[in-house]
Length: 297
Image 1 (cartoon, rainbow, N blue to C red):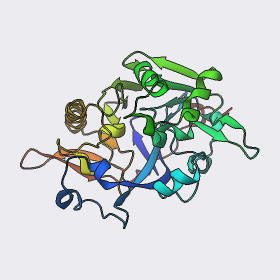
Image 2: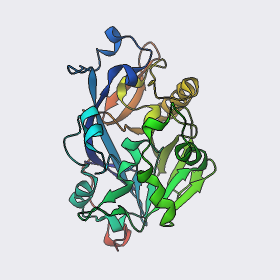
Image 3: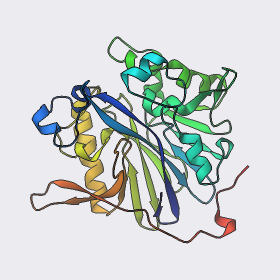
Image 4: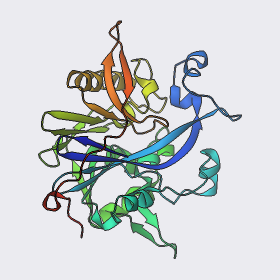
């Protein structure tokens, strides 16, 4: 599914679906309330999609997050009910791109469900960089936390997801907000992780936000909703309100990372001035001329 933001095209790439503990994902929100949004299985888990997004500008293919990948062991597959490897590379192929065609990978943060697909184990069991010609953009403070985790944060990281990026020279550490090009930028929000970053696209007076786990699904619009994994929930709260306000003000698109049914939509304020999510269907737009197509190598 593809969406247009001015001159920029965005493709939704569904990498996988996994099931995670409902109490952890909804934090302090009581079950009678969160159960309106999700139905748990017999082990108390609710489904989360793993949505990655491919942003195509005139000169670059930019991937937002890399999904689960193919390195989860049997224990993790059972915990999260993962039945098969991530489909990100196959999803890219559907739009005519190979891993070598990706120029930039923006990792909103380094948790395994966002960075797992940054590296891949091949048929011979060798660990390789999934997108060999891409520059991987990670916030320096998040890198420090992921490479030196504590007892609370250790469970969210798999070092083999990201350490090979540095060894291969494909890693670029950012110190704050960053312009990838004239249309695409990253903005540090913190909250979910120390230096969690969101992605902003702007073109021809149209905007879109990729909020990462500041707003994982549409159920998280209420300010009090935050996961138990958030290191700084009050920071998440303020970041969420900022993203929702800016998206609503510009009638922009919001691309959600874990929404299973309708991951793309607009933000509107209802009669009580509360923000609500309005799903948007993919827009059928004519292809750009060849000279404006992102290059393939």
